[in-house]
Length: 456
Image (cartoon, rainbow, N blue to C red; front, side, top):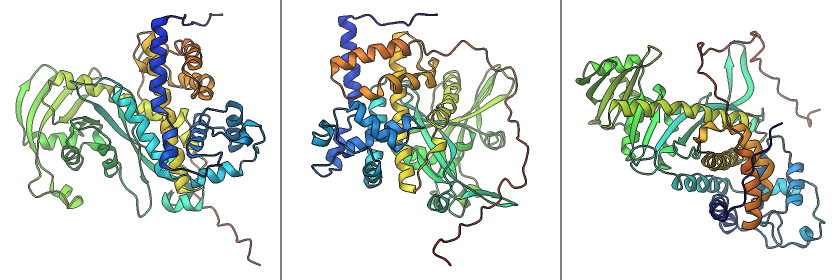
């Protein structure tokens, strides 16, 4: 049995822990929320307490409201108000008060917390590429509980057999490359009359990015309307192109450089007639000066890129190779944090739980980066799931202790997290494919409406 690696006491290291403590305190300073949305003076479930409990529930997706209330009484974080019921241990364990407090909490406060945490992490991290920030955008879908309000906002999928019962929400998320922080996601309907595409949901993501940042995305975003939005937001872009769109642009481009396995063209990119029809708001003189790159990959398949950057094709190729990180990040959000099973019954509560899920994700990412720094490894060499387990097990109940107490707890947790490294595994040797389950003719059969209990 291997002994657990520990971090010995060291004055210089203690200063680093104090610094880390202060940084984490800044990331999760929930007391500011009480100033934004004050509650009654005798309230136990203040805004900061409710946010703490929501984050705890998202860190522990199987945690019920009852478990969250009992955890609050057990850990008694410093953000709890000076209340007689708390100090004497007579606070009721019933979940009604907490449930009502969750309902009263404005969604804007949860969004404020998510933005504060992500922006603090980004500002504390070095730039990713040529002293500039790089953000990777991608989309995904999540299914929600079959509640009527959610079904109206996010209609289920349908086929020839009828409509399903599970609401489907479309998410677009941007991750900062250096810190790994996830920005506040944009949410829309995947199906129904109000359905939107991923490309129409990126506006909110772009407003959260610092000027002069670089936006990176796959071929689904490699269209003129998205590139134009990015440039109008004072940002640069590096997008993959489909072969069909690349071939069309190459016909009007000028070859400027050619190598053994790569070529570069300059091009004046204008919207096609079909794009103008879909996006009538595009200016009549809309045009983008871009470079096209064709790169032969090790797999023998060409990679087509379009960019507003003037950097070399070698640098851009290496940068785009890191885009696959976002797929792992989204998987961690959906699977590890279990956002696929958010149990909200209303649209507003769904947004609150989604936003606090992003807070929980970013806190684990921050802890993973600190553990990776100690063993001189890239953060993504550390297992997110194992780091997540370490964080919620050893630190979630100690977020608001003193710096000295936190230092000891933090040192203990980091000693464990240092071992949460992914094994050295060879690359995939087989094609990526999905195996279909046995089809069922009733898979999307519409559920019968429940009869009104008041009817005779």
